[in-house]
Length: 74
Image (cartoon, rainbow, N blue to C red; front, side, top):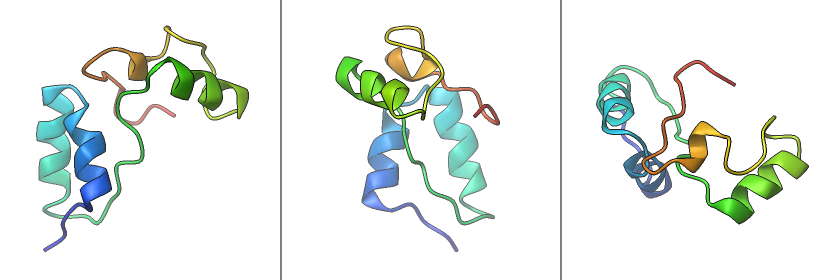
């Protein structure tokens, strides 16, 4: 059975409860990593400047708390 690293668990804990439920089911069948959950202002600015996000603070779904990043959305 697969399991999340401590880093993935921390990122997932900052996400909307519905995303947590989905990904807790996903890990039962597939090995995956949670790369990012909530992003604060500085992290979002760096993601935007580094080309990892198309939107600036506070317009990303990562910027709400909990994060509401859509599944399957880049």
